[in-house]
Amino acid sequence: MGREESNPYGGEQSTSKAGRAECRPFGDPAAARVFVIGHDPRLQRSDAQAETVFFLDYLGQPKPTEGPEARKYGLATATVQYIEHLTGGKVPLAEMYFSNLCNEFLPHAPKGGTVLIPDQVADRGIAAIERALSQGKP
Image (tube, rainbow, N blue to C red; front, side):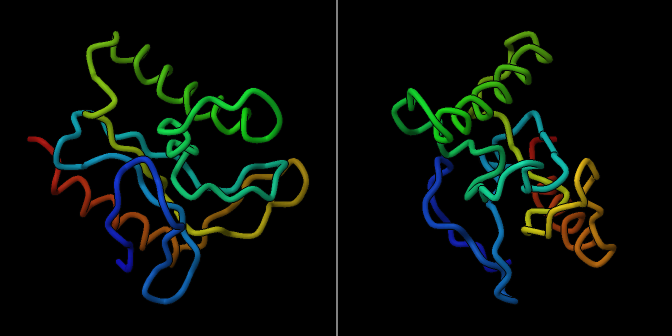
């Protein structure tokens, strides 16, 4: 895809070759023993757009103490802590890879609804996940 190569803790928001704004996966698929796949980058009650899935780029920054930035940091740490819990603490962050079925920013769902990923967008997401898995550890 048209993603820029960068460090796993974030940087500029990436765009696809077709110019769609996307959030970036997090981690190195070649080093990953655990792949975490979310649904889409859109938060239900916010217009915030994560540059990196689950706001994991926030882990490379000082911990914010209040406001939306603190909540984004909290989502990132809670996500990693949950995966650490599921793996019994045996898989370090460096061996985790995070992405979404859809890393494109789709319109919000109607209130209380779920974002439905169009087939064409889901197909692109599945292809990206397959590429990442092909780089992963056997």
